[in-house]
Image (cartoon, rainbow over all chains, first blue to last red; front, side, top):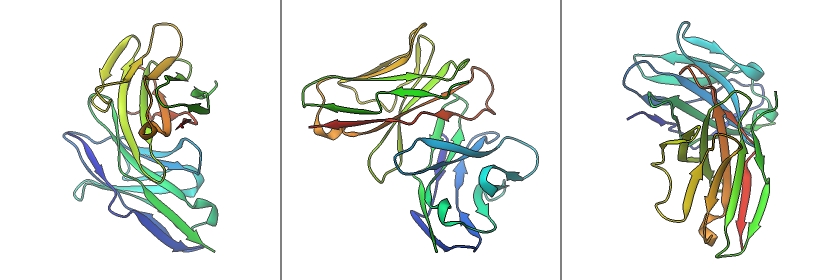
Length: 112
Length: 115
């Protein structure tokens, strides 16, 4: 069965510093990986996805993610964090049944 | 192309009443997913439907909960005889009929409060 782990419940980073939100996955076969962000009282917004090709994927709002097959990881990154990036971030994998399996989420706090 | 529409946005029910949550997927999307989220917690998968079919309902409680996605009209998540523990945000997502490489698009959610 497919699964996703986000080992950190909370990540704190100072504004202007680089940020990383970690995600590891377990799949059989090729992984289809996604990152979503959720702001308070809102639905999830799609940020980026990895299907195939370059291991570095660029997405919305300056975010990018690095796919690492040997480490089965798909960490979300941004070179310079903004206070407005503070939100809940979810990593997801799509399984062959076409369902989306989400990680438990990581709360990012960017401190001014 | 309107996004995924959920209504109502907020729903208050007394214990024992029924709650009906509606989800209209994006145009052209035939896959619908329902998730539940408790405050400050992650998403819990409930059910995955395609038009007129339930594909995976492994996350649905065995009693009181049901879901449908008819040929015409929105997907409905129905909770009978609600209890306080059903209070949560319920999110619907949709995706196109083909391809593993497409993302799911989420609605804004329905916040159910059971009093």
